[in-house]
Image (cartoon, rainbow, N blue to C red; front, top):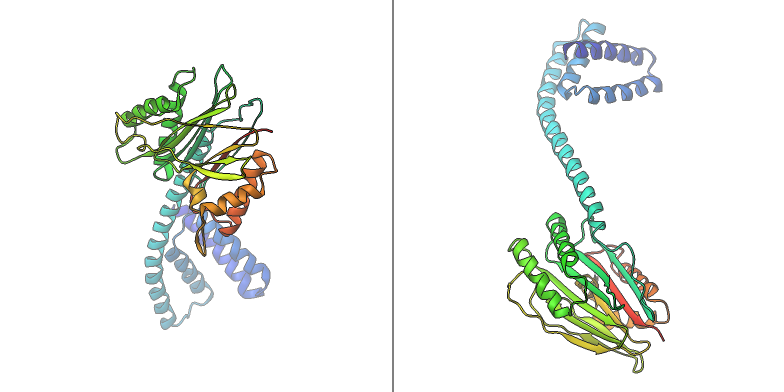
Length: 337
């Protein structure tokens, strides 16, 4: 460390001498480059002041005592500043390490979501899921059984950040561990509820809606666990209605039973599943109403399901000044005409 300091001292003397003699931009540029070496060698601010004093004493042996005393005063100030700066550097390094870990977790979280949307005859499916920050508390899942039935789940973890991501991994584990044959929505939520209750912390809860569309009879069967009500669009009547599915959130009570509902789906009808980040979009004028959401969907209903969800997201994002306040997930299943 002493050798490094002496080398820095020699360099500083040469740079300062050059600048005092020529007083040009080259000298200032050399000073800027020297400051980078100061950081690389972890030279403290008070040591930099000492370098300056030692250099001045070589150039001006008769430096007034008052000037020398003022530099001693400056060194004391720089010592306090240096301690604060080093603490800042430590906090910044820890923040970078945390951000790196969050990035890894966020990338891993993306692997929990489906790689592709299953293809089902006569059914058009669109999905969009956008986190408000790097880590999302929303989850969606598709599964297709041997009979061609399509199951779709949408969930919202009550919480944010890494804990929510860990809960998401538990949901995926629970969904993947269930029997491959088709389960009725109520039975599926009951099975998943027991998994969550056993494995997730008592202060973490999960809301979910799960539905299964049977293309053989064109019925949509669904159950809910405290989740945001979905929407059903009746094409013949050009009318929206809420898909209410009452039920406790997952993980609250091991013995919870979930009621099952069903809707007949005619050509042109579609089902909308969503997270509360969609209905609780907040603008300067307050939260948007569900009527505003249905109006947007109706305006884009001539497009494909994927184009509908994309356009609804872009419009709601614009209304919020392109700043999401909550995770946004929207799924549409439409029976083609």
